[in-house]
Each structure stands twice: as C-alpha cells, then as structure tokens.
Amino acid sequence: MCVSGKKVTIVGLARSGVGAANLLSELGASVIVTDKKSRQELEPFLGKLNPGVKTLIGSHPPEVFENTDLIVISPGVPLSSAPLKAALEKGIKVIGELELAYQTIKGQGSRVKGQGKVETSPSFLAITGTNGKSTVTALLYEIVRNGGFNAVIGGNIGNALTEEISNFKFQILNFDFIVAEVSSFQLETIDAFRPKGAAILNITPDHLDRYASMQEYINAKCRIFLNQGKDDFLVLNADDPMTEEILKIGDRQWATGNRPDIFYFSRRKEVNGAYYKDGLIHFSIAYSLSRIAFTLDPSAFRIKGVHNIENAMAASLMALVSGCGADAVAYTLKTFPGLEHRLEFVRELNGVKFINDSKGTNVGAVIKSIESFNEPVILIAGGRDKDGDFSALRPLVKDKVKAVILIGEAKDKIKKAVGDITEIFMEDSLDAAVARGKDIASAGDAVMLSPACASFDMFKDFEDRGRQFKKAVMEL
Image (cartoon, rainbow, N blue to C red; front, side, top):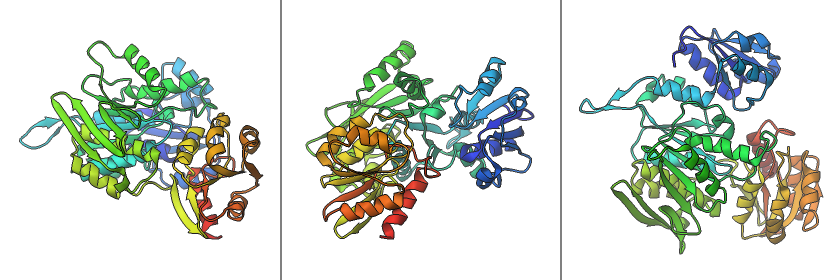
C-alpha cells in the first residue's frame, strides 16, 4: 500500500488515531484527523501528533470523508455511521489502524538473515476472544522473548501497532514476531490482515449494544482467520460452545486443501494441543512431521485460577507451534505475574482480601472470575450496560457470592436479575461501594470489583476505574 502523496483522513483520535496519523505522515501522506470530541477532551492526544498533521476537532465535516483517497478509522467508530457509508458508496477505501499496521509491515518487502537466506517480514500472532485476550497476549509475548525471539506487542493492548512501527524507527521489520491483541471492532475493518497464528479464546455475549445480533458478533470475531490458509495455524477452545459455530464459518470459508492447522486447548477432554487432566497440563501437539509432548504443574504458576489455566494453555500452545521450546514455556509460567486489573490482588485488611478485576467488563468475564474463588465473595458490580444478560450470573451468585454492591447506570437491571438470591446494596460511588464492602465483610471473605459492565458512565476507562478502586482500598 503506497500512501506517499495521498490524502488520508483519520476518524477518531485517541491512541490508535495518533499512531495511524503519525505513521502515515512519516510515509509521506497528507493527513487530517477528525474527531467529534472537544479539544479539552482530546488534549492528551493532540500534543502527540507530528507537525504537519491537520486536525478538525468537535465535528465531522462531510468534505473530509469525500475529498480523500483513504479513510482510517479507530476501533470505536462503527462502519454503520452515515459519513462512512457514504464514503464506501463512493468507492473510497476504509480500513482500520490494525490493517494499516499490517500492510505497512508486510509492504516493506523481505529481509535477509544469515547465509544470505531471504525470509519474510515478521509473523503476526493474533489473539481475540471475549475474555482473557490481554493476559494471553502478554503471556505469549513473554514466552517468545524468553524463547530467544525478537518480538513486539501491541494492538488492543499497550501501544497501537502503528505507534510501535514509528517507535522502533521501522526496525520492527527485522523482528521475528508481532504479538497482537485484536478486538472484534478492529477485525471489522481488516482487508489483507493474515496472522501466521491466530487464537479465538472464547465467545460469550458482549458488545450487543453495537452488534445487531450474537451471530453478527461471532462473525466479527471469526474474521481473524479470514485470510488464513494451509501455511497458518488457528488455536480454539474445545470447551467453548461457540467453537462448533466457529468451525462451520471456517469450513464455508476455507477452500479445499487450504484449511489452517487447528489446535485446541481444553480443561475437560484430551485434544491435539493442550489439556488439563489429573491436576496437570498436558501438551500433546502433532503437526506436520513434528510432535511435542510434556506436562506442567499449574500449582507452580504465578497466575492462579481456572481461567488462567486456560490462558496458560492457549498462550503456550501458540508459542510452541511458533517454534518456542518447552523450557521457555515453563520458565515464563513460573515468573509471569499477571496483568493489572485482571484479578489483581490489592491488599488484605483484617483477613479480608480486596481484588481488582476492573477488566471484567462483561458477564462471561465475571463468571470466570467468581469461579476462581473458594472463599465467599462480596461483589462490586455495575456501570454502563452493554446489553448483557445478568441473569447468567445467578448460579454462581447463589453458590459463592455473599452480597452484591451495585453502582452505575446498570445497577437497577442487575438488582432485578439477582436481587432475590443474595443481599443487595446500592451505592452512588465507587468509594462508597468499597467502604460498604469493608463494613459487611468478615475475615476470610474477598471483596472483588468485577463490574460486568463498561466504565464510561463514571470513569474514563476500565483502567481509571481499577486505579480508583485500588486508591479507595488503600485509603481504608
């Protein structure tokens, strides 16, 4: 993709918008960024733009969508918006920041490595799923680095990939792997994106305020293997009910003889890949003319919980198929501390543990988190509803949740779903919810923030919510 001398419109500033705008300007494009938010809201990002990048703040003038050669949109911008639909009807190319990064990297040609041997540009290892993708992405990145490979991490975690290309002054082209977390929003706007290895960790209801149906959400996730073929591989969750639908979509898409190698992870049955049995993780991977077989004891891992057994299997499986050794996998799992806002231990006070799980932004994530506890849980939940089915929480709330403390826009809806099976408290702020949790907890309980909702009714994002929770806990 050649953009030198072309007019490019970036829709949506924020992190990915800055990365895309700066990369395109470095590639010689004439770049204009448009965003409906106010200049005050966008101040942290405006100062990061390269000189020469033009901005239109506070509105989306129609002419910037019409008088352009290419439109690059941020993940939060839906393709269904009227200006984008009009641009598409005129034949103007619309892609996302992920696709821009991919085409930039793949468009730079091959590299020479050792003995004059020509190799392709870095391989993409891409992870999607409703829950767990940030942990799996970070864990995979650490494994491949400990395995002796040069890698960069980005996408829906950390920096935008376009920003990383600029940060590394294009030396990223000499790396072995690009490890990318990709969301359904990002996958909506891919075109040529073809990861060497892809994983769909799970699919549970989420973002149904954006998608017209669950099927539409599944279809978006499955775009991760849209361009994959027989030289690539795909990792799937054998225990997820949606995996059967994923395979149906794949079989309709893959031409005869062009199906990627498929490996599975499971906590319930033996599979070609990784599975949990008798307290151990068994790796049994057969592909091409190779076979990998060994076991690991998850009690030695730093990250705990049943969901992290699944995360460990998925990340390790991707790393092993990509050429990492068993030693790198074992070492990383023993040392990897987990991520902020994902079942993060904050402190213990008077025998009560306080846990920050602010990344639990949907019902499926909260279910996984509650499953990880043996002790009684006092759950702090609520926020902006994403059309979630909170009634799915009922079995675990009944069995494991001592009380639920609700905040935010969705608190009445959640109360209606579970209020008859446990004690409910309604609070107006996160600080008040934390104080209430301290008051009603007894030694041996765990007070956990796991909202099952988006954060935007009360906070800047889930990170802001998690940090405010930790601040409130430390001030008790």
